[in-house]
Image (cartoon, rainbow, N blue to C red; front, side):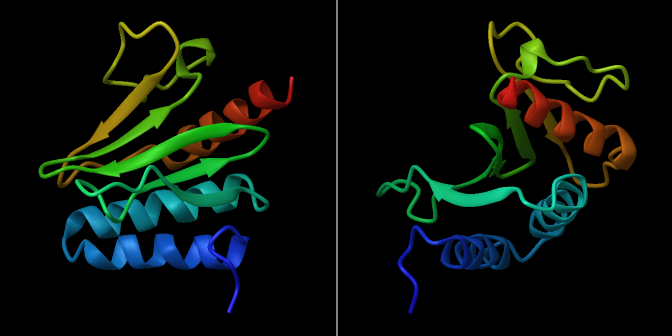
Length: 132
């Protein structure tokens, strides 16, 4: 059995986290995950920040550093881009944490659609920024 830090084990932990969400949030997080893998096939998936108040941890997607986190809350899924304030967002996907100095977030609510091509472009831009 692989250690928790190995990519396959980490992906399985994200599978488990998504599986725990038996409503629209799980479907949304799964959709975002799929778009991210389309944009960056070699993206690294991890679960970070496990603690007693959040034993399942937070799904994180990285390439040369953290790209974004995907946190399910009671009424939304929050995608927080670590360096979002430095990214161009021509499609205006960022709708939360707009005053933060470094990060930016996309809050997705039940029934929301996301511009798939714009999201994939944002993910690729985040990876390019991390690599620079």
